[in-house]
Length: 336
Image (cartoon, rainbow, N blue to C red; front, side, top):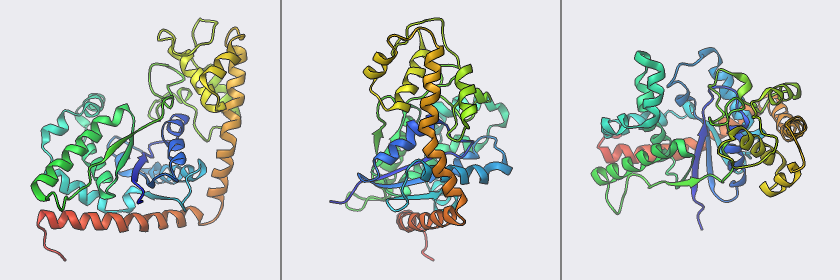
């Protein structure tokens, strides 16, 4: 039986943190034998907001290296850089020409980010969901891992599929396959160390708000020591009035691999945050050390990363090229 295909990616807008890892990348590792996987570093998306050109290539390289360091196997998954496959940009343009403007104007993320950028907001931010649709549809993905903040974008992709297939395809020969959401496992949502009600984010100007995958042990210790807590002494999960407590308990659960019940029992006799923060620090360092060691191995071996990304690009291009040709034919373009 043919495996279903999965497409996902992370933006290289900064250093990856534990929220990226527990929310996305670790889940990718667990599905490598279940699906046919395409994992890309979505650098074209990274420039939809102001970015540092001098660091984009560095962040792209580091993100790809961390994919492998976290357990993505290039023999079982296709890993590539989005901009290395020009078909992403071309298909995005083709889809632009059949996507109604009002579909994009209702996107919640655009409204939120546009408010922050004001008059400097670029067309790319508005068009971000069409590029995301192109990413998914190029590989005829069956499943797309999504969190709450991406559900609306996947729905737009599905709307585009319906429109393209109705106008330019047929039931016997649809242009695109209809993708379905692959809902993330419960408990993978990691919140800011500075505000337990907000997601941990690479774009947060406060570096103490996140634990990055490559943080040194002394940096991890400092961030956890200074992270926001509350006045409560009992350590519990799921209290809506204590988001920081729930977040730190969840982090400890994720780092140790225990159940919520086991963590709750372990922490039942603790009073105050001092001992717990020491335990959380030790657990974080122990969990991240093998990832950091593998990252050093990947980046220290001359040519290894470049070779894997070249192989991934060639594999991605084979699939993307076939889809792009099908779309061009459906739209009536003259073949070269």
